[in-house]
Image 1 (cartoon, rainbow over the protein chains, first blue to last red):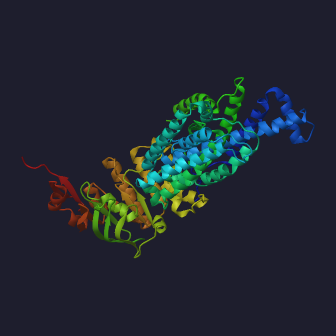
Image 2 (cartoon, rainbow over the protein chains, first blue to last red):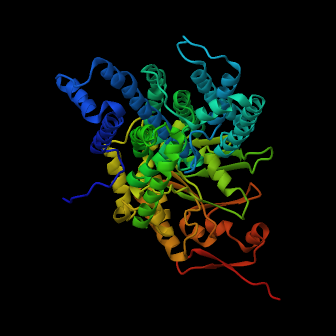
Length: 348
Length: 256
């Protein structure tokens, strides 16, 4: 018997969507690089870009070209990397905790990094000539330490369930924040420095920060995207996931470890930038569906686009530089509200 | 076809197990219903068979105790209140049933999608394939959960109250459909059912559980007696019979 069946509509990441998203990212980066060029003049920077691609002559002097390629370009790329890390980590956290309000700082990553950064600012004298500055190093270790502490506490309190882990995260966050506040209170002369770090920002001095963070974020991104289907299975709850042959506790550990690694790398080079980890996965979810095999890769790209543009605003909106965390919240929240309204109106 | 044998199964989380020393045999291709009053341990026993709770004793499938991975391929489980992830479509949800047949990081093949397609058709869900789970009615949701378990293509189904929340018509339709599918495929079904009349009509064998222990087992007509229902449910009932001889458990009011 002949009959035509229409294929059931599975939610998969279509190559066309990825290509489109990557083109948007490329456009955002070129825009941020060209339009954010200040005194150099955007037409001349554009000319430099065209010259690099076509091999023609650039309108920029050698010194001006160095500003573009040694300062501006790494900053734009780093913004993309940090955005990708935070957004994909946020998506993973939301999946693991089955809670749309989960963000990558939930398990003590922010508190750990904040405490470690404060201690370094207060007690470690400024040094030069280190391969890696003590502040990023401390923030990285602090973020991973905070999450690790939450995990150990959650496990010792019993079960691999998410509720216990969440409460452990709350306890660890409160404890580490208390230490940070205490250290801070004893050394009020450094408050401004710590506060500035807390608000997040990308004050890069070249390509080094990018190369420092890239390996961690890359490994985490591969792991997270590779586990996306397992994350979908986890949303069925532990009993059903186990009946499908998955070990929920183990999958959670792998996902949280990868997401926290990405978060720690991001925090180390950019401080605490909020909102990216929540708003980007949500926008992706509302636009592209609820399957994590779509949400995770698109959050990766969407987070990069979002933070590249946010950093552009932070650099150019006012004569001085705005804290990046302020921009992400200020620009992200209304945009999020609009997306939320229109999508809720559309779907039943 | 799968034959299931339980030998002295005790299960539960705390120091005192919820289910104690249950032994039973489920013949291949049969429908075995676990009944009993609230809190008797029906769901826990089902989870123990599925390997989802700590458990002592032996659960044997075709004569041997399967590993965790083997279980997922021969044994499909649907809980009483399944989580239906918000925003997922019917197709995506049913596709998750193919998980045990995939490598850890593999993607579904065209064959997996075909199985899902066929399963949706068998359960009359094709028209709903692209719908979000939360937009379905209660009956449609139960059918979708059944589709996910059937897409797992296992020879044994463990269904915890598959008719929860359904009115008599929808419950009947679901059980009829399930009965038809299991006969076509030769699947063994083990289910908990709180409705004793339905249990008597669809199951070949009943296991009456009370306080975590087996109170009675056998053919529905043998297990369901007014005396047993009084002893274990504290219920006054009359056991009537339908025209074709199935027992009907009817509650009666005590004379005042």
